[in-house]
Length: 329
Image (cartoon, rainbow, N blue to C red; front, top):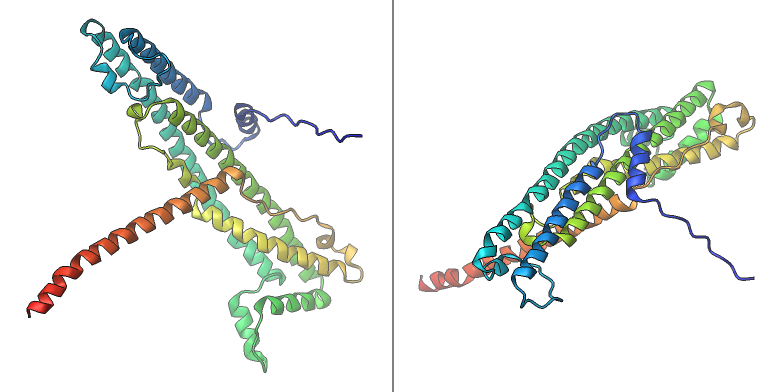
């Protein structure tokens, strides 16, 4: 029999945003999706009205012509109709400006909240690392240097040395060690949930900004754009702190998982809560936030290449005069 693939319905963005905001009891600000769509729809409606009016005033214009710039055509409109068309032309700017006023207000509020969450999560990450060090799951550089000073040989592989110390601590550890390990694991699970919620918050808002701005750039001619295109201000929501937290939590989760595996191999391990606690998987950034990081990296690379080209031109322009001055002397 032929295999049939089930079609999984894709939830519309507006529905996903509504469910997210309904489930979020933190009071965090979200994208004003409905208000932004209304302002954008009004802008598009005014542009279509302007398009129809210009075509009526210029009957010789081929019907299949796609008007991408209205300013040159306004000069060709007969005088009796020029006033009305100019009024319609200026009416396009009002809802378009309102669109960006709402968008920038949302961006400021969401950015402020995201920054507060970044700071809070960074502090909690510090506490998580402290608990892992106390439990012997992680070792900092100072601890390993002190250990190395007591040995007759140097430590070549810090990670391997840390794993051996962890095994030794689990084999010889008592109830205090087991309690410290359980505290680190429980705190890690709570932290993963907070970080996952934060990444989900960023993902839904970044997706909303991208979708609306993409539609705006596609449907609104450039002469009506109120801001430089493309508008990438929302890229700043995915901060360097967020990226660092995501890259740090994964090795911590792996170290805790390794510690739990070693603990379960110890006789009578089932009596320790740390051996039966289910560890959460460290979250990853969603597609939207990952796309923002990729685009930001490409923009930085383009800017760096441009600056390098300017620097090359400046230095090369001075080679000639310098050589001539040297020759004159």
